Image (cartoon, rainbow, N blue to C red; front, side, top):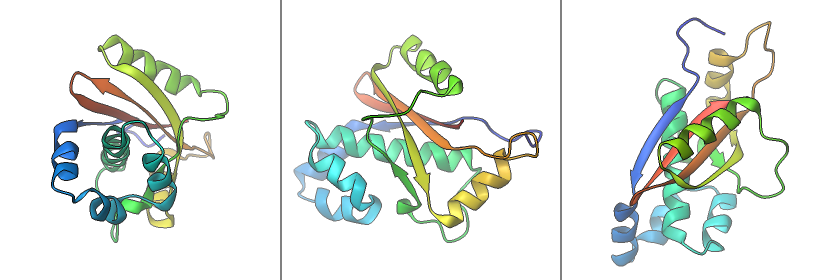
Length: 156
């Protein structure tokens, strides 16, 4: 790994922001602008669409931090959160992250693989892939922390 390269990106999103967007009737235009089609399907079928939207935004922001900023030409849809269903075995690194979230008091901790656009994946690969570790996949964990949503992005 490159010395000094981040291994975690963390973000906290105020859930109240998304409830305000919904109350103003701006939730669908907002989601269309920042969520992929897959994320919008997940959010639309979620018991709490505001929570699912906040999860997606928190994960995307956590990846921006993991990447050291937005790559040139970055778009919110460059990072896609996949719903936590029928997932492969949890990478050891993510096991530790979910334990930290739970230890910090986060509730309903979930995790899932993520995917990235070519621009974001290129930056990601430059940070975490080395001859010793030729492949690394983006993952995230998230949960509720009080009235907010917290997310941690990493690679496995």
